[in-house]
Image (cartoon, rainbow, N blue to C red; front, top):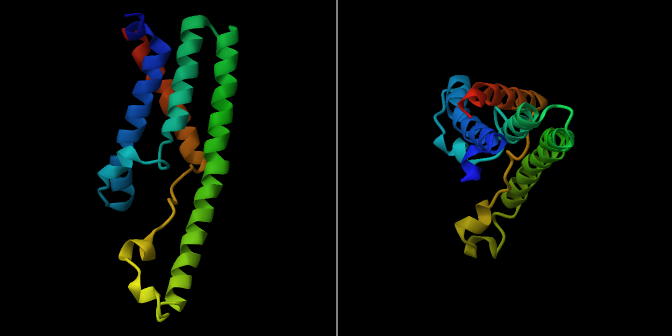
Length: 157
């Protein structure tokens, strides 16, 4: 039953859920497109990875103090996670966009090829996931989201 009183864990889980769900209205406001699937996808505003690690680190800081070794480990873990979300994963998404364009161009050129017409639609249209990482602003607001949520729910524990 101690699991239910683990504030840093619950802060991180709540931050993940909140950041994923809030992507839907943010996307709708920005583009007028209603995409409920965003709640279950990677990328977008705010970063749920950043929200989770920031909430976890804030929760550990509140529970154990900012001078504890546990806070230091969590802080470094958060920095690495946020750096990766805005760096490696974002660039992989940008590469996926270009690769998808190349595949579409390639398919256009071989459309008349003898074997091409025998292939299934799925084989012709398989694309890489392009929304993998985050823009730095998405990571920043994910981190702010996690910190604010941790501070708001701390009194409940």
